[in-house]
Length: 41
Image (cartoon, rainbow, N blue to C red):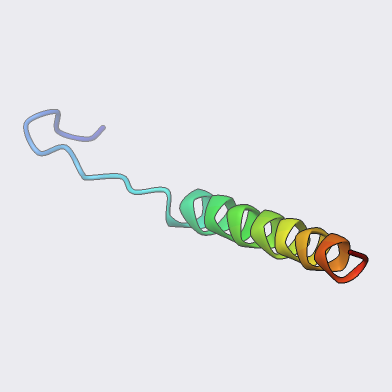
């Protein structure tokens, strides 16, 4: 069993990277639609 006196710091790097990727993908899609609508004016 692990010692509770020395807790390891757990940083979910994969989940953070996945969330950042989703945000970037959403921004790319949003700006793509935004500039597509601007070009139709």
